[in-house]
Length: 338
Ligand code: ACO
Image (cartoon, rainbow, N blue to C red; front, side):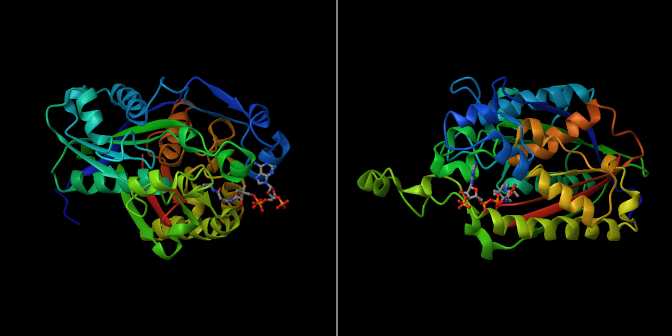
């Protein structure tokens, strides 16, 4: 290893969720579902949904970013690059990274948009890690933000998907350090496009241009809503999570027992419990907050890590593992010496 090389640490985390709490009982008024079904299958008790007009994907990202910068003890002007992960951008194009640049008043710094859904934050973190190590940037904002609720089918027809997803944002400031004992140890990224359509939103896009949508004007065209083959996704998730976590541990000569805190993407509590059992991890080694926020896709890991930090569950020197799996399929892990 090149000993003069910088290492990347997470110097601050922050999150923002909309005020509006939607409990499982509230969903019973919109569709044929019930609290017991949702809790048993997913562990979710409530989620936050944006009240239309109150929040946007980029706006929530900016709020989370400001907290992360404050918690890092930095100034907004210290940020020299932006990475924004989302599957629910404000606009089809441009992506929300540039909106963060404008909102924070940052002077023409670069902004990169990441489209890796549930794995988006870990992919973004991996990119930031490389830029820091090469010395290209010093302080990078990595943001995950999602505004799912506006695009869900909130009728009985869409209940298999819509009860799972929540809105919110989380952010990290990734900073350079000369300390050889801390930082991101490694990141591991994977994809398998053969399963792209098992968890996807197909239209509107270039697969269905606007003139075709207007011409068809078909209220039963479900391609405008996210589609999820739930059982299929579940089976792949419970295999890929342990696999990619083990990949990170083995790369660094660690075992599951060495993990101080695993922060998995909050996809479904049953998936996290399955991973915990498979890897023989104790309850205190695995962080879960899906009960309160649902699945917030690219935002879920940074929201969870922010809360874990606030609760004092991560301290300097801890071995922290993040792992994600989702649409693409894409999956990823990161191992950090905090
Ligand atoms: N309320 C009540 N009943 C429902 C609901 C609902 N919200 N949704 C579906 N049902 C019904 C179905 O219609 C079905 O009825 P039927 O037997 O009469 O046909 C029954 O419940 C069982 O449906 P399944 O889809 O087979 O239920 P399953 O046990 O597979 O649970 C779930 C569904 C929770 C989506 C599960 O498949 C799962 O967790 N999949 C993993 C995918 C996941 O977590 N995705 C998160 C996003 S992706 C990611 O982040 C990784």
